[in-house]
Length: 140
Image (cartoon, rainbow, N blue to C red; front, top):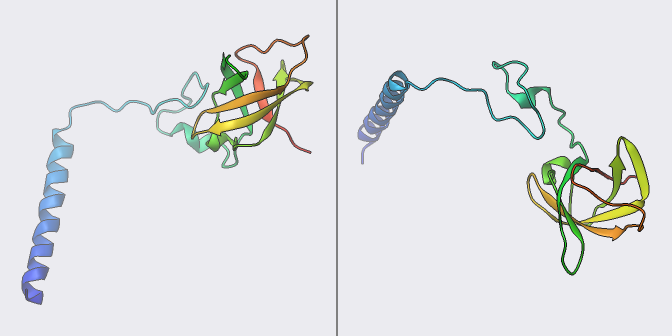
């Protein structure tokens, strides 16, 4: 194939793609809606800006317990995962009402983008874990 023919085909393809996109954009009758809210956000502050613009680039290192999966080993399911800093093997502490309950230790055993599972490694009989409790990555 000659250079001239391939250039002509390339230009024609680009024009057709641009025309198709323009026609599709003009034919669109759906309204714009605000992006999905992240995590526990309950409102959109500005519909012209995505929610993630105001978020930190760094992971939050915290999540909330969604539910408990009781079986041979007690496991809690979290609403945070890899994007929040939860990796397999990470040790976590339990927080309730902003206060740390130091005697409770959890170890992350599975993690995906926005959810994780943690094994309860230490739990005194005086503490009951409930959905909504906050989990934070333990730091030295």
